[in-house]
Image 1 (cartoon, rainbow, N blue to C red):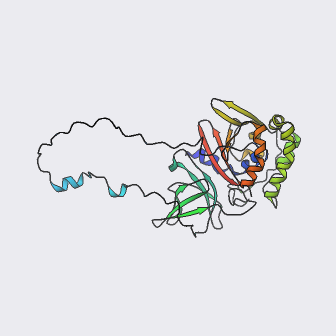
Image 2 (cartoon, one colour):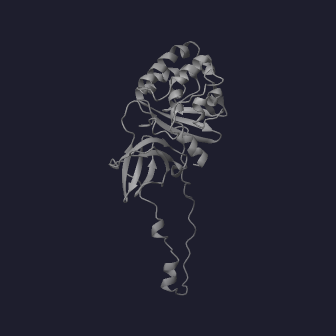
Amino acid sequence: MQAPVHQLALRLVEPIKLLVIIGIAYTLASSGWYFLSEPVPANLGAASPRTTATPSATLPLADIVAAHLFGIADQAPSAPVSFDAPETNLKLTLEGVFRADVPEQSAAIIALQGRPGELFTVGGKVSAGVELAEVHADRVVLRRGGMFETLRFPEQPGLLAGGVDESMLPTGDTYIEEPVYDQPVETQEYLESSQIDSPDPGAQLRDGIASYRERLSNDPQGTLNSLGLSSVNAAGSEGYRLGDLAQSPYLAQTGLQPGDVVLSVNGRPVGNVQQDQLEIDNIMAQGSARLEVQRGDRRFFVTASLK
């Protein structure tokens, strides 16, 4: 992942909450849009005729050893990580995961006890003697002293991305004083009331869904338009394109831009608001959302808790 990609992924937590509330963030996670490179199949053609080796001059043993005919031991690939790696006892909090097409370019937001979360890529040093080994949708695997340990999202209701609160966000400031430009009054009021510094973000999430359910049912397309969104179905991509919504000061710190497209969430493709609104209860019942966002030719996955 390139640096701008890291900066975008690091600040995507709050938009997830807003997008899920209005029923547009239900989508296919890794099963449809997330592909791994497959190995090139071996050539199974006819074997070449065997030839008889002819004797050659004897080479000094030292020259043979120096040639590293069988490779260098230190460059041997690491053993696959076991899926039953024990839970870590380190004082760490997993706040977000970002999976890339190339596993080695995946990243995660991890917070050390009493400190804000930081973004680490696979192979990065999390703390002394601890590095990030693998990134999965619901957990990460750490390597410590040659052993592997699992770090999962904490079970804490009311926090985004398994434990993100106002003190942990990168900007350190979640409240935007400036007015929301180019938005209807009702949208502006809702955005201003959606700050995550409320005493119960989970209840606020449910209230927001209830307030939009009737509007989505009666006028789904009009509701999208009022929020600066539009349906997209072109060139094999279907989802919701961000328009004026991305220009809101409330979302300015996320790095989202007009033209970014929400493709999927939690295993379901999106793009048909009349169908997507029916999944609001399902996504809330699952307790988490895995959102896929496309910018240009790059796609990013973000996991967040909705409890």
